[in-house]
Image (cartoon, rainbow, N blue to C red; front, side):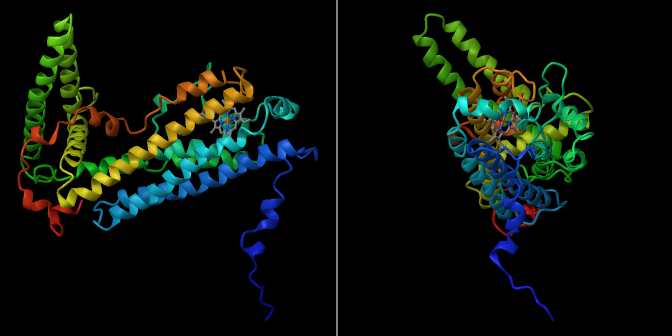
Length: 371
Ligand code: HEM
């Protein structure tokens, strides 16, 4: 039998990888364009790994009952993504060794291709759970339709559009996280128990009432120092009211069931963030924190990319036809996990938390932990 000897180059398919830098195939690649292509390709390889790790995390969280030991696995997957994104931010420095003038030597021929068409980045946005209503358009162009249109005539088009369409049919990380958070025991109560909605309401009310005491003390102190004490008090009252409306999910449109679901998810986040010393909440809190970091890293990446672009092309129109830096800066406002951020402005100090009921249920090994 003629067995193939395992080699480094075959294992990594280096002949394919190292022959994939011919650009538009005109055989005219100078050293700066080689640099430009390799930096982009390195990003796309990282994005491939990021997508696979996010899918693993999502697959764990989407189970109807997530075993306790799966939670550290999710943290592990998302931590890996966070480290990659940190590196991806630093990697912009390598891109910046291209000077504006050297870029101009080959920039024109790239039009209309652009990172705008990075279908893996779009896939990631969809997989994380970015809502279509949030997605920015430039002029009348929707970034996804833009890819669909170009895909019709380009050799890589079937893959580009196919991947986006497939991602749209998947459960997003956000949805999986919501399903899992929804089942969180709050004051020992789970959604399948009778009276659960009352328990959730009671917890939220107690939390908001006790938080108000601590806020009032702050308002009084600042009002005493201010020329306009009423304005200070009004600011605190406005903050308290928006916290209440948010926790009660008053912003949610649709059925009562939908509002109750979102209210329970937000209450769960508040519960997990507030009582992390309870053994059964320690990993869930870490998981939530890791997802916050993931979103933070992506926002930082968007900022960093925009600054690198500003340094290289100033305020020019992008090769993809957008307003360039002005467009990119607006994308930094995207938030896929707004609840995870919002809950931070609702937290009360430990001394002002309502007492935990059924505390014994939050010890390790209890069935209440199987969500
Ligand atoms: C010389 C370097 C670069 C320049 C001048 C540049 C410029 C731009 C501009 C102007 C846009 C807005 C769309 C357009 O009108 O074209 C854009 C979008 C984008 N670029 Fe870059 N880019 C560079 C490098 C990179 C690199 C290394 C990556 C890594 C993958 C990247 C990924 C992206 C992505 C994902 C978008 C879409 C952002 C969004 O729509 O949210 N770019 N780029």
